[in-house]
Length: 319
Image (tube, rainbow, N blue to C red; front, side):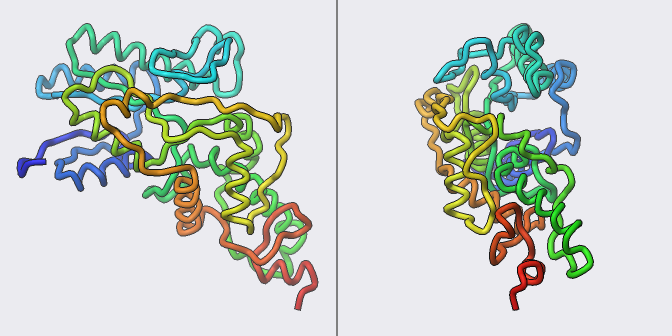
């Protein structure tokens, strides 16, 4: 880039994606105008921003972070999804599967945004990430990592129950977990056939598309595809101290990969830097550093959860 700084506005700058994006933009010599509020995935929330852009008459390009939720869901599941795919809103409303209101709101918001952009001649791009994983800046557990780390956090939460009822009078707790991740086995159905992108790749893709003169339309930004069994195998290999399940309730052991094609953004010249291992190692290590996951422990207790080393020794009678 040249010596002249360009100005961008980032909404939800304190959030999971926004905070990392601000960091990368500053490194690219942008002047960043950041807002703390997180715009809810509603039509009115999106249109209010777009109307402000039109009224300002100084906005050159608008990049909207959409979601895989606006692409993936319909009566007939595909093996490969691309930018031509849209979530079937009526199907979601009738089916009422877990998360259906979010899927509908994200899909309707993006559709309304495209309609407004065309009517008002806005240079508008949408970037569509799947499950976002990796190191992060915010102090709390990002929502996408609650799902991504559910094979770990589900067992960790069970461990807290063990601690409370078995050893609460014999040793102090060495770690804490936020209550928001309780019951994470519910996330297994979301994780079973998922697409992933590293947070850093996603933020770099935002900047890439914003700067590229030929970028237009929708862009899927997916680094890799995997099943929950692939994720669990990786976690067991990289973090054997956690009691990651080998089987998952109501999840077929022979799942097929469902892919999100990033062909369009790759053909424009963008390259992904991170693989699935990079994403998960970064996420787990960051969570540990922030106290959002327990540290490594010496052994498992009855194969059901985790205890701090001192507690584990007392429960198992070790010297």
